[in-house]
Amino acid sequence: MQRNIRFMLNGRPVEVQVGNHQNLVEVLQGQGLFGARESCAQGLCGCCTVIVNGAAVSGCLTLAPLIEGADVRTIEEAQPDGQLDPVQQAFVETGAFQCGFCTPGFVLMTRQLLDAHPQPSDDEIRHYLAGNLCRCAAYPEIINAVRLAAAKRKG
Image (cartoon, rainbow, N blue to C red; front, side, top):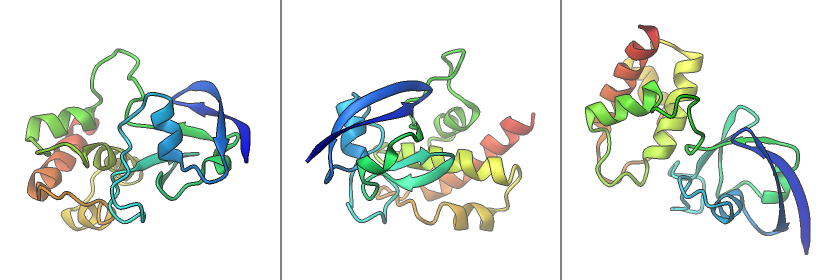
């Protein structure tokens, strides 16, 4: 069964036709947004992280019909000046990625972490990002990126 849904996507209104079985990642890819990637299809790796109504969700587990009327934010959301935000810049400066497959999820989760805890400890960083997996094992660089992003946001 197909239905039309409307929602806000990175600040712009969108109307799409979805099937009851489709997940949010499939809808986003249909909109040309490929930052959220389905990897484990079980909500365990964080590669499909998307922000829905201010909360991080696993896009692979979020059924598309449930985003009717929601505010959806993805890694592709452009900054007003077209530049990288402090979190993205910190990930680049510290080399907190190798293949980059997991990076969008880590960036979105880091933004949420720093919104809630502007100066997190290393333990808080590890705990908050525990649901995101990096198969390249860039974890030390990711921790450094979060520290740097916190400093950039503060200064």
